[in-house]
Length: 168
Image 1 (cartoon, rainbow, N blue to C red):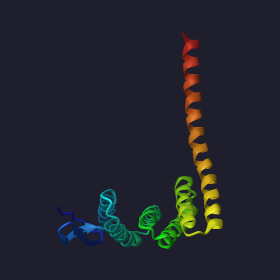
Image 2 (image 1 turned 45 degrees about the horizontal axis):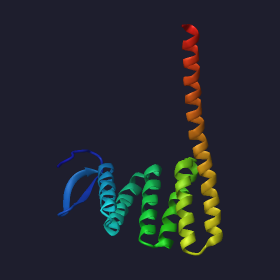
Image 3 (image 1 turned 180 degrees about the horizontal axis):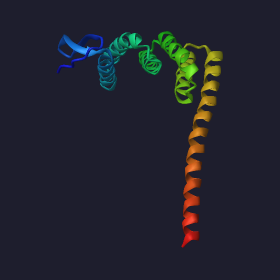
Image 4 (image 1 turned 90 degrees about the vertical axis):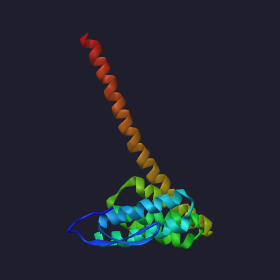
């Protein structure tokens, strides 16, 4: 497979070894992400982590905050699954630094949940409590918004049906 582009190019890793190919950075990052996911689902956490770290290196060049948040979050999850709780906290904190300004309740909720689980494993119960409390706050905000949207949609449907009945 071959991609031609004037954008920055890099190398990619195939299952058989290192290959040189004209892949734009964004496609290379996607490749690493897909490989990280594939190895995660095969329960090969070391290889999965390796690919997520490669994705991070590539993505830092692009400085895409949303992508970096996701990568740090994935690496935090990998570290937790490998019982590297301190490393997991570092990754989650990096993700949190980037996510706070975006005010995305869903990702903030997930990050605080990850932090709470790690702090609990590290016996930092005060931090675990605070993180879990923040997680619950964001969870309530997130689901309140989702519930509010659903209620609005249902109310709109009710009004439409009632209007149609009146018109008949």
